[in-house]
Image (tube, rainbow, N blue to C red; front, side, top):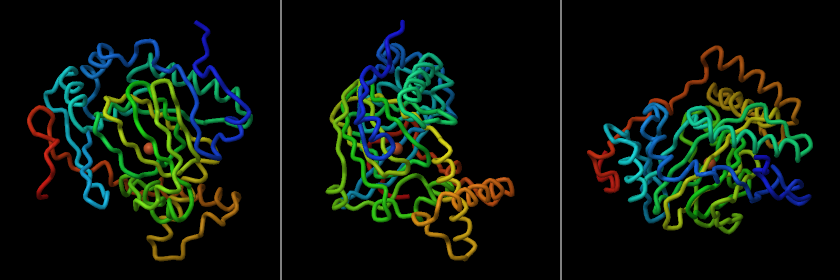
Length: 307
Ligand SMILES: [Fe+2]
């Protein structure tokens, strides 16, 4: 079949790509790859160590607290049922390789983007399949890579915020790129006034400038999306510069203002970050996050009362 996975493109989309939030149509996953039967079979064989099961609790000021769980003995059908019922967020990491049928479509869609957008040369494309509950809300955060979100089932409201110091403070982005913390950023409801909002239906994709913060409210339906992460040379330099700047800050030295640092100097910082990582100066603390509930055994919907 030679049908295009991104059937419509325009000069406006091309102009906006990576400069502004945007949404466009796609056909990734439209061939039955994310229907219940296929998902159940995938979940049956999905490696537990590549599965994140999260619940976010919110207080009256819309501040979130994350709890993470494990699947325990739950089979594919039980995991799917749990996600359909409540307010879970299940992230299947490395889904492009664990689920190659879907991964091939994502890579083919990126090949189309590469062809359509002069100068867009992603060096690496990978990603996760996200299954989320009708009442899930994913908190305000920024990702340490470029993202194209291919939405495939259900409805969700995506809020995208400007990538500036007020919405994505450099010091927080350093911690995010260093993986010292989960990707949450400080959020206040007033920030919503600056957001671009999309109600995503199946067959819509969205993307935004690298490091632009965003959050998601599911709209009462079970949701399936593929979050494709990519790195281009500019995004890699930007992430590396943040890592180096974060290390410098933690040494107690004055950190450079990256929003005013020319790209050539950022490239120097990126090179430094590679050396810092090799020297073991950048520690990944997220991998040690403790999992506090188990599907089928605990009730992850219950609000955490003490910890
Ligand atoms: Fe994200």
